[in-house]
Amino acid sequence: METEGVRTLTGKVALVAGATRGASRAIAVALGGAGATVYVTGRTSREAAGAGTVLSEVGRAETIEETAELVTAAGGRGLAVRTDHLDPDQVRDLVRRIDAEHGRLDILVVGVWGGDRLIEFDTKVWEVDLEKGLRMLRLGIDTHLITQHFALPLVIKEPGGLVVEVTDGTADFNRTYRNNLFFDITKNVPIRAAFGISEELKEYGGTAVSLSPGFLRSEEMLDHFGVTEANWRDAIEQQPHFAIAESPAYIGRAVAALAADPDRARWTGASLSSGQLAKVYGFRDTDGSQPDAFGYFEDVVFGGRDGRAEDYR
Image 1: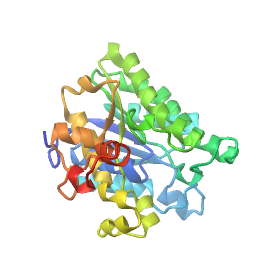
Image 2 (image 1 turned 90 degrees about the vertical axis):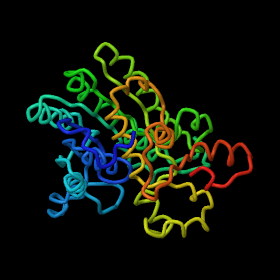
Image 3 (image 1 turned 45 degrees about the vertical axis):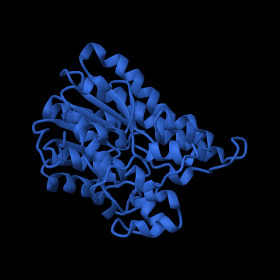
Protein backbone atom coordinates (compact mmCIF):
# COMPACT_ATOMS: atom_id res chain seq x y z
CA MET A 1 0.00 0.00 0.00
CA GLU A 2 2.34 2.73 -1.25
CA THR A 3 0.76 6.12 -0.51
CA GLU A 4 3.52 8.57 -1.42
CA GLY A 5 2.36 11.07 -4.02
CA VAL A 6 -1.27 9.92 -3.78
CA ARG A 7 -3.77 12.43 -2.41
CA THR A 8 -5.43 9.92 -0.12
CA LEU A 9 -6.16 12.47 2.63
CA THR A 10 -7.84 15.24 0.65
CA GLY A 11 -10.47 16.86 2.83
CA LYS A 12 -8.91 15.62 6.06
CA VAL A 13 -7.83 17.99 8.82
CA ALA A 14 -4.73 17.27 10.88
CA LEU A 15 -2.92 18.84 13.81
CA VAL A 16 0.76 18.05 14.23
CA ALA A 17 1.84 19.42 17.60
CA GLY A 18 5.53 20.21 17.88
CA ALA A 19 6.13 20.33 14.13
CA THR A 20 8.95 22.85 14.04
CA ARG A 21 11.56 20.27 13.06
CA GLY A 22 12.52 16.59 13.14
CA ALA A 23 10.06 13.73 12.93
CA SER A 24 6.99 15.90 13.48
CA ARG A 25 7.92 18.30 10.68
CA ALA A 26 8.30 15.35 8.32
CA ILE A 27 4.96 13.92 9.44
CA ALA A 28 3.25 17.24 8.72
CA VAL A 29 4.81 17.39 5.24
CA ALA A 30 3.81 13.81 4.44
CA LEU A 31 0.23 14.46 5.50
CA GLY A 32 0.25 17.55 3.30
CA GLY A 33 1.63 15.49 0.44
CA ALA A 34 -1.39 13.24 0.80
CA GLY A 35 -3.68 16.27 0.48
CA ALA A 36 -4.53 17.09 4.10
CA THR A 37 -4.97 20.47 5.71
CA VAL A 38 -2.34 20.49 8.43
CA TYR A 39 -2.10 22.80 11.42
CA VAL A 40 1.52 22.89 12.56
CA THR A 41 2.45 24.19 15.96
CA GLY A 42 5.52 25.00 18.00
CA ARG A 43 7.12 27.88 19.85
CA THR A 44 9.64 29.02 17.24
CA SER A 45 7.95 31.50 14.95
CA ARG A 46 9.51 33.54 12.17
CA GLU A 47 7.22 36.47 12.85
CA ALA A 48 7.95 36.68 16.57
CA ALA A 49 11.64 35.99 16.05
CA GLY A 50 11.77 39.02 13.81
CA ALA A 51 10.49 41.05 16.72
CA GLY A 52 13.40 39.85 18.81
CA THR A 53 11.42 37.49 21.03
CA VAL A 54 13.18 34.44 22.44
CA LEU A 55 10.87 31.55 21.62
CA SER A 56 12.67 28.28 22.10
CA GLU A 57 15.04 26.56 24.44
CA VAL A 58 16.89 24.51 21.85
CA GLY A 59 18.73 27.27 20.01
CA ARG A 60 17.81 26.22 16.48
CA ALA A 61 16.62 28.32 13.56
CA GLU A 62 13.75 26.24 12.15
CA THR A 63 10.28 27.82 12.40
CA ILE A 64 6.70 26.64 12.21
CA GLU A 65 6.15 28.92 9.22
CA GLU A 66 8.80 27.01 7.29
CA THR A 67 7.04 23.76 8.14
CA ALA A 68 3.69 25.14 6.98
CA GLU A 69 5.26 26.25 3.71
CA LEU A 70 6.69 22.78 3.17
CA VAL A 71 3.25 21.28 3.79
CA THR A 72 1.71 23.56 1.18
CA ALA A 73 4.51 22.92 -1.31
CA ALA A 74 3.93 19.19 -0.89
CA GLY A 75 0.33 19.59 -2.04
CA GLY A 76 -1.63 20.18 1.15
CA ARG A 77 -2.52 23.30 3.08
CA GLY A 78 -0.16 24.22 5.88
CA LEU A 79 -1.27 26.54 8.69
CA ALA A 80 1.27 27.67 11.27
CA VAL A 81 -0.07 28.49 14.73
CA ARG A 82 2.45 29.50 17.36
CA THR A 83 1.57 27.45 20.44
CA ASP A 84 3.31 26.62 23.68
CA HIS A 85 1.83 23.22 24.53
CA LEU A 86 2.67 23.73 28.19
CA ASP A 87 0.15 26.59 28.27
CA PRO A 88 -3.40 25.22 28.55
CA ASP A 89 -4.94 28.49 27.39
CA GLN A 90 -2.89 28.50 24.20
CA VAL A 91 -3.79 24.90 23.44
CA ARG A 92 -7.46 25.57 24.15
CA ASP A 93 -7.38 28.53 21.76
CA LEU A 94 -5.67 26.43 19.10
CA VAL A 95 -8.36 23.76 19.24
CA ARG A 96 -11.13 26.34 19.25
CA ARG A 97 -9.65 27.83 16.09
CA ILE A 98 -9.55 24.45 14.33
CA ASP A 99 -13.14 23.80 15.40
CA ALA A 100 -14.30 27.22 14.18
CA GLU A 101 -12.54 26.84 10.81
CA HIS A 102 -13.31 23.17 10.11
CA GLY A 103 -15.55 21.72 12.79
CA ARG A 104 -13.49 18.53 12.88
CA LEU A 105 -10.06 17.07 13.53
CA ASP A 106 -9.36 13.81 11.74
CA ILE A 107 -5.71 13.29 12.62
CA LEU A 108 -3.94 14.33 15.80
CA VAL A 109 -0.18 13.83 16.02
CA VAL A 110 1.55 14.82 19.25
CA GLY A 111 5.31 14.93 18.83
CA VAL A 112 6.25 17.76 21.19
CA TRP A 113 9.73 17.28 22.66
CA GLY A 114 12.80 19.54 22.70
CA GLY A 115 14.50 17.87 25.65
CA ASP A 116 17.58 16.32 24.08
CA ARG A 117 19.87 18.97 25.52
CA LEU A 118 18.67 18.07 29.02
CA ILE A 119 19.69 14.41 28.96
CA GLU A 120 22.62 13.34 31.12
CA PHE A 121 23.15 9.76 30.01
CA ASP A 122 24.76 7.20 32.32
CA THR A 123 24.13 9.42 35.33
CA LYS A 124 22.40 8.12 38.45
CA VAL A 125 19.06 9.68 39.30
CA TRP A 126 20.52 11.12 42.52
CA GLU A 127 23.37 12.70 40.55
CA VAL A 128 21.50 14.29 37.66
CA ASP A 129 20.62 17.96 37.52
CA LEU A 130 17.13 17.77 39.01
CA GLU A 131 15.96 20.94 37.29
CA LYS A 132 16.90 19.44 33.90
CA GLY A 133 15.18 16.17 34.72
CA LEU A 134 11.94 17.79 35.77
CA ARG A 135 11.99 20.07 32.73
CA MET A 136 12.33 16.98 30.56
CA LEU A 137 9.17 15.55 32.10
CA ARG A 138 7.33 18.81 31.47
CA LEU A 139 8.40 18.97 27.83
CA GLY A 140 7.81 15.32 26.99
CA ILE A 141 4.83 14.39 29.16
CA ASP A 142 2.85 17.44 30.28
CA THR A 143 2.74 18.86 26.74
CA HIS A 144 1.29 15.62 25.41
CA LEU A 145 -1.39 15.27 28.07
CA ILE A 146 -2.43 18.93 27.87
CA THR A 147 -2.80 18.62 24.10
CA GLN A 148 -4.79 15.40 24.33
CA HIS A 149 -7.07 16.92 26.96
CA PHE A 150 -8.16 19.77 24.70
CA ALA A 151 -7.93 18.16 21.26
CA LEU A 152 -9.63 14.81 21.80
CA PRO A 153 -13.17 16.26 22.12
CA LEU A 154 -12.73 17.57 18.58
CA VAL A 155 -11.27 14.28 17.33
CA ILE A 156 -14.34 12.34 18.51
CA LYS A 157 -16.79 14.64 16.72
CA GLU A 158 -16.46 12.33 13.72
CA PRO A 159 -15.91 8.56 13.87
CA GLY A 160 -12.61 7.15 12.64
CA GLY A 161 -10.23 9.71 14.10
CA LEU A 162 -6.53 8.85 14.36
CA VAL A 163 -4.29 9.82 17.28
CA VAL A 164 -0.53 9.30 17.07
CA GLU A 165 1.73 9.70 20.09
CA VAL A 166 5.30 10.14 18.80
CA THR A 167 8.02 8.82 21.10
CA ASP A 168 11.54 7.40 21.10
CA GLY A 169 11.62 3.61 21.19
CA THR A 170 8.93 0.96 20.95
CA ALA A 171 7.56 -0.83 23.98
CA ASP A 172 9.81 -3.80 23.20
CA PHE A 173 12.92 -1.68 22.68
CA ASN A 174 12.27 0.33 25.83
CA ARG A 175 12.46 -2.76 27.96
CA THR A 176 16.15 -1.85 27.80
CA TYR A 177 16.91 0.94 30.25
CA ARG A 178 17.50 4.22 28.43
CA ASN A 179 20.38 5.24 30.74
CA ASN A 180 18.70 8.25 32.29
CA LEU A 181 15.66 7.76 34.52
CA PHE A 182 13.92 10.97 33.49
CA PHE A 183 14.44 10.24 29.80
CA ASP A 184 13.36 6.63 30.26
CA ILE A 185 10.11 7.69 31.93
CA THR A 186 9.47 10.47 29.44
CA LYS A 187 9.72 8.19 26.42
CA ASN A 188 7.68 5.38 27.93
CA VAL A 189 4.73 7.55 28.95
CA PRO A 190 3.52 8.19 25.34
CA ILE A 191 3.36 4.44 24.80
CA ARG A 192 1.08 3.98 27.78
CA ALA A 193 -0.84 7.17 26.93
CA ALA A 194 -1.64 5.85 23.45
CA PHE A 195 -2.86 2.60 24.96
CA GLY A 196 -5.09 4.44 27.43
CA ILE A 197 -6.44 6.80 24.77
CA SER A 198 -7.20 3.81 22.54
CA GLU A 199 -9.43 2.44 25.30
CA GLU A 200 -11.21 5.78 25.71
CA LEU A 201 -11.76 6.14 21.94
CA LYS A 202 -13.30 2.73 21.37
CA GLU A 203 -16.89 3.86 21.69
CA TYR A 204 -16.19 6.67 19.21
CA GLY A 205 -14.57 4.51 16.53
CA GLY A 206 -11.18 6.15 16.99
CA THR A 207 -7.68 4.72 16.74
CA ALA A 208 -4.71 5.66 18.93
CA VAL A 209 -1.15 4.38 18.57
CA SER A 210 2.33 5.28 19.71
CA LEU A 211 4.92 5.52 16.97
CA SER A 212 8.70 5.71 17.06
CA PRO A 213 11.25 6.40 14.37
CA GLY A 214 14.41 4.32 14.36
CA PHE A 215 17.82 6.00 14.46
CA LEU A 216 16.57 9.33 13.15
CA ARG A 217 18.63 11.61 10.92
CA SER A 218 17.05 14.72 12.38
CA GLU A 219 18.51 18.16 11.81
CA GLU A 220 19.97 18.08 15.29
CA MET A 221 21.52 14.64 14.83
CA LEU A 222 23.09 15.56 11.49
CA ASP A 223 24.58 18.67 13.07
CA HIS A 224 25.85 16.60 15.98
CA PHE A 225 27.85 14.44 13.59
CA GLY A 226 28.85 17.37 11.36
CA VAL A 227 27.16 15.96 8.26
CA THR A 228 24.18 16.75 6.04
CA GLU A 229 21.45 14.59 4.60
CA ALA A 230 23.45 14.42 1.38
CA ASN A 231 26.58 12.94 3.01
CA TRP A 232 25.15 11.39 6.17
CA ARG A 233 27.05 8.15 5.63
CA ASP A 234 30.26 9.98 6.46
CA ALA A 235 29.15 9.85 10.10
CA ILE A 236 29.27 6.05 10.19
CA GLU A 237 32.98 6.22 10.93
CA GLN A 238 32.18 8.10 14.15
CA GLN A 239 29.17 5.94 15.04
CA PRO A 240 28.96 2.58 13.21
CA HIS A 241 25.30 2.07 14.19
CA PHE A 242 24.41 5.23 12.26
CA ALA A 243 24.49 2.96 9.23
CA ILE A 244 20.91 1.97 10.08
CA ALA A 245 19.76 5.61 10.30
CA GLU A 246 16.60 6.73 8.58
CA SER A 247 15.50 10.08 7.26
CA PRO A 248 12.60 11.93 8.94
CA ALA A 249 10.58 11.33 5.76
CA TYR A 250 10.34 7.66 6.69
CA ILE A 251 8.19 8.21 9.78
CA GLY A 252 6.22 10.84 7.87
CA ARG A 253 5.32 8.24 5.28
CA ALA A 254 4.41 5.85 8.09
CA VAL A 255 1.81 8.25 9.49
CA ALA A 256 0.42 9.09 6.05
CA ALA A 257 0.02 5.39 5.27
CA LEU A 258 -1.62 4.74 8.62
CA ALA A 259 -4.03 7.65 8.20
CA ALA A 260 -5.00 6.43 4.71
CA ASP A 261 -5.66 2.85 5.84
CA PRO A 262 -9.42 2.23 6.25
CA ASP A 263 -8.51 -0.72 8.47
CA ARG A 264 -6.16 1.23 10.76
CA ALA A 265 -8.24 0.32 13.82
CA ARG A 266 -6.42 -3.04 13.82
CA TRP A 267 -3.42 -1.15 15.25
CA THR A 268 -5.23 0.66 18.04
CA GLY A 269 -3.36 0.68 21.33
CA ALA A 270 -0.20 -0.67 19.71
CA SER A 271 3.37 0.53 19.98
CA LEU A 272 4.66 0.79 16.41
CA SER A 273 7.79 1.81 14.52
CA SER A 274 8.38 3.32 11.10
CA GLY A 275 10.28 0.22 9.98
CA GLN A 276 7.50 -2.08 11.14
CA LEU A 277 4.84 -0.15 9.21
CA ALA A 278 7.04 0.02 6.11
CA LYS A 279 6.91 -3.76 5.86
CA VAL A 280 3.12 -3.69 5.98
CA TYR A 281 2.34 -0.67 3.82
CA GLY A 282 5.25 -0.89 1.38
CA PHE A 283 6.59 2.67 1.63
CA ARG A 284 10.34 3.30 1.53
CA ASP A 285 12.81 5.83 2.80
CA THR A 286 14.21 8.54 0.54
CA ASP A 287 17.05 6.28 -0.62
CA GLY A 288 14.66 3.48 -1.60
CA SER A 289 15.52 1.30 1.40
CA GLN A 290 13.33 0.03 4.26
CA PRO A 291 15.51 0.36 7.37
CA ASP A 292 14.44 -1.72 10.37
CA ALA A 293 16.45 -0.09 13.13
CA PHE A 294 14.77 -1.92 15.98
CA GLY A 295 15.28 -5.28 14.34
CA TYR A 296 18.94 -4.44 13.88
CA PHE A 297 19.40 -3.37 17.49
CA GLU A 298 17.52 -6.35 18.89
CA ASP A 299 19.36 -8.92 16.77
CA VAL A 300 22.84 -7.49 16.30
CA VAL A 301 23.54 -4.82 18.90
CA PHE A 302 21.80 -6.40 21.89
CA GLY A 303 21.43 -9.97 20.69
CA GLY A 304 24.97 -10.53 19.48
CA ARG A 305 23.87 -12.02 16.17
CA ASP A 306 26.21 -11.65 13.21
CA GLY A 307 24.87 -9.08 10.83
CA ARG A 308 25.39 -5.70 9.22
CA ALA A 309 23.14 -2.69 9.16
CA GLU A 310 22.76 -3.15 5.42
CA ASP A 311 21.11 -6.51 6.11
CA TYR A 312 18.34 -4.57 7.86
CA ARG A 313 17.73 -2.00 5.13
